[in-house]
Length: 463
Image 1 (spheres, rainbow, N blue to C red):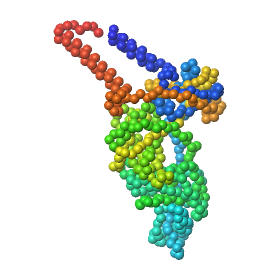
Image 2 (cartoon, rainbow, N blue to C red):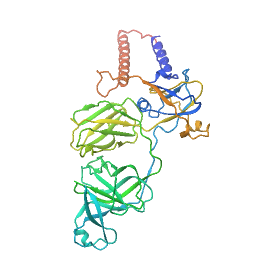
Image 3 (cartoon, one colour):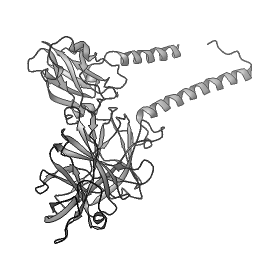
Image 4 (cartoon, rainbow, N blue to C red):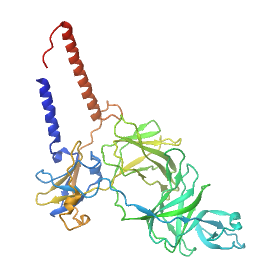
């Protein structure tokens, strides 16, 4: 009888958990202000909602009306949208720049030009075409290269370098363009190029542009200073195949748990896939090569997610800093950042932001408002409809649907793991182990009781 009652209670608990949840059952809730509109309405999930989802596919997302009834909705974009692919242009070979000596004739086929390097005008020359002359090999080379990009019609959003780089040393590249080889316009670049030695070591050959750049009918010049062993062979542009991606929702992670002076660890309270990881330091003239690792529970081994170089270099006000590390949208509950190449994290202030892909939803609004958006509940079945089902009911483009505003967002505090639990072990795992241990003890007790009865020659009671 006792066993039957226990099983019945367990089944009732499972049924209650599997029943349709209400808004109060979710960790995060907000009011959807439709402005009195009816029909299909669109809403964008803020970073706080994405940071509460317990499903990688946003299954624990709901819309409720004023009566607490669920409202039909669909995700307007996949929870893990792919960034717009960029196509590569043809490779433009590097033309080496040389110092022009006053009073000395230029080699045959050379073109003289003026550059303004380090706030000092300088006359240089370059062999634009044909076979390099013997004079080119003897002339003083400059840490700069010229590229004839006049036939490049499409605006580029990044430059990819094919170059020889010194190991373990980020190289700062500056860029400018000119139509007449005399008047130069600076180009704002983001990041540095580098290559570190070792397996899965960080490397970067791409320089992002702050805005699309047109190089048609213009020359491109790249310069580098303070680094030996740099040789650029060619440059390739990346052309965006679609509109610029919207700004990613982001959250800042709390203070990490240090592991000696080599690593930092975080427990993540969400299952939302991570698109990028922005790791920065406020300390000037700092450089740290890092490995990024992740796992879902303490019993799993750490798996490699990516690498990055965190740096802040240069004079105050003109510092260059690293770009966010691009990840392959992993869904992990534990994150670890390790220093590599003999560096240490001890004493270096680190700030980490998680960047998500934007997620929109479309729901059916009417006279039953105000509506509530709810997110964040474990073991919740998906309720989103196929987006095509809602799109087929309107002649409007989904992007043109009216946008609902989020008001009065509120969330339940994230439960901290009990202090007595070992680091890396969450309360759910500890509870499962406790249930397993209790079951083993119960079975052991039953077996011991039966064994004692058999020794006395008693007949065991019927099951």
